[in-house]
Image 1 (cartoon, rainbow, N blue to C red):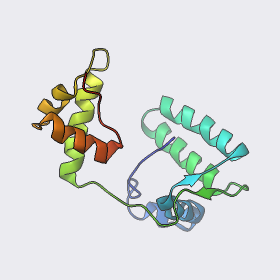
Image 2 (cartoon, helix red, strand yellow):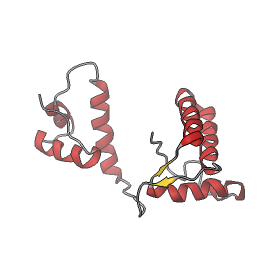
Image 3 (cartoon, rainbow, N blue to C red):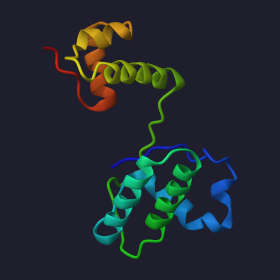
Length: 143
């Protein structure tokens, strides 16, 4: 499971507080991708499932609890990469992705054609296929 958020979503000073040192270290390590196993993984999964059901402030509090669970875990974690990965999309790329996602989600009950999504983004199907392959690692089927 992947949870993405901006590290300054609570304001820049939040994670700089001394009480947040373990979480700050976790966030620094997370640039490499992390995998947890055993009890830590089970606890994190339980917290994540709860997090997905919450809204507003309780959801933010559960995210902090989840981060604390991972940051203070006794069992070690494995890194997925030897070097940090940070490919933050530009505002333009994010807007394009958001439009594609909205089109796909809006059509999830109906057969979805690559050409329809491409048209909503003002792209040719071939260009959209290349774009989605680069962003998501896979293109949409073109029935």
